[in-house]
Length: 117
Image 1: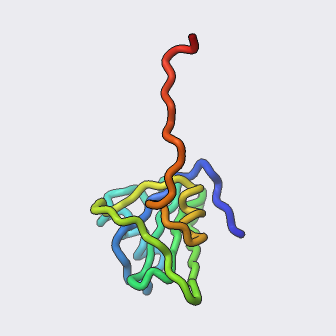
Image 2: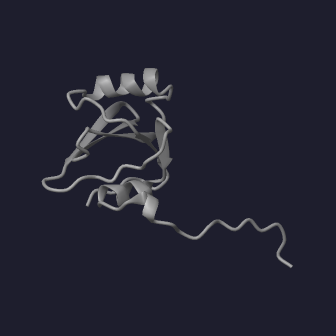
């Protein structure tokens, strides 16, 4: 299984895209439609209308790389929100790629402690 560096930021594009777009088209979409930096240390995740394909765009030092995953029978469960972009962590991205519904998964809340005793 392919694993990403856990320190990367992950931005998930909510709307379906035209999957004929390749690196240049996706980088332009990130910059002009989303207002984000396509050279940032992170990855951008896109899906087609049927949610059976995913493309992941990332910049690494001196060039882009593009990952493409196609499911043969099932569909990816895309988060339901009104925001055009959803920020995830790398673990959540791996769960999404493995078919988990992120809305149904709830971990422990983070505890903010101000003093020990």
